[in-house]
Length: 250
Image (tube, one colour):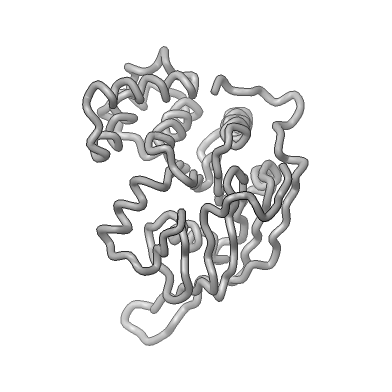
């Protein structure tokens, strides 16, 4: 991957600051301190840091789940810092795909039904919802498991459902929060290989992790400490999967 000025910037934060106030007190706790970052289309970024470093706060703001105290956040040309809660919800459902550590699947629904849930809120027709859900299930290698419920799936299969669900809205950014944290090492590597395939197809992924082995898979590593960016490095050699690792059917 070659980085240059003509590549699209899908998101950027400028002088981003987030301050929390301890309940019942006037004590302010800064979580992010004047951060400046740009995220490029098709890039795979890992955000790392110890507990309390600010990585989860940054991801929540990028995912439109929270807003900064000051500074700006531009997503797809829209200044998120100026939006109300309803507008944030709309942007979140249209422009962001979320991949969670614990999957957050609805246990009573099948794979296809879990994939259809966000499409219902996007006002897709039943026929279109089913067609799209089947297409996504096939792309993550779960076509034969489409009528199974989460409890009938392995952890890796459940995470594949989560990944497929995150792509329902064809998002600008896929946000992954410790996506291998609940998986064994071998299954986790297969999920990371799937991420490699997604990035190779042009997806933009921002991943939060505490695991340096997971972070080393990314093109770019951003390290946070006490709300500051202390490292922001790119590794262009990681633009392809590691030799010998299994490639998923995607």
